[in-house]
Length: 225
Image 1: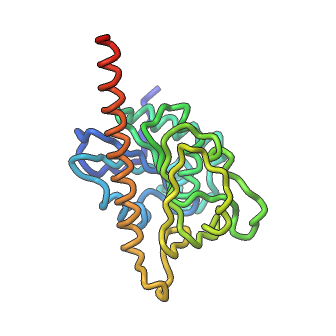
Image 2: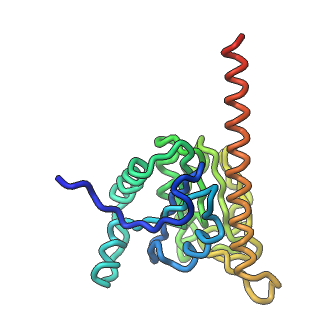
Image 3: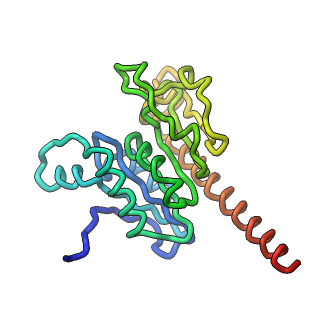
């Protein structure tokens, strides 16, 4: 059987010390403007960003027919396959909305260096009582949740009392919607929020690198004693 061919877009150096796998949301693929701009802000000599399509989106790209997202077992299996295919000593996983929700489900199992969730869909906009996100109450992987303050899938007000795991760092994008876009009246711009999101991600990666280095140094001292 031939090896599978994955639908990906790579940016940054393949020799970078850190790699980020980035999944799309339910309605748009890896070439969506949001993911393209974010990748441009992040990728470089220190970080390689690999965007990928889930199977249903790859099929849509081939024939132009709109399809609903694959069922969760298929999405999770594809995420695991991507982690295996693009394994790296310092592999972070990330996703927009649905892609981030699926990444959260596997993060602990695949020993990811960290997780970035870009707008977690805590509930459908028309169903504020249909809550999900239990994984974020118990996750052990260092996690950065970037959420728009007025996200219709889970706003800052709605999440005020949400019992996040101690491993989850929540950063709010000012007046942002589900794609971090603010209203004109806010005085904030979409590029500013996206740049802030990228800055948060870079700082988080650097903090995890420093923590890992400190842990390795302490382990070395212990081994000598």
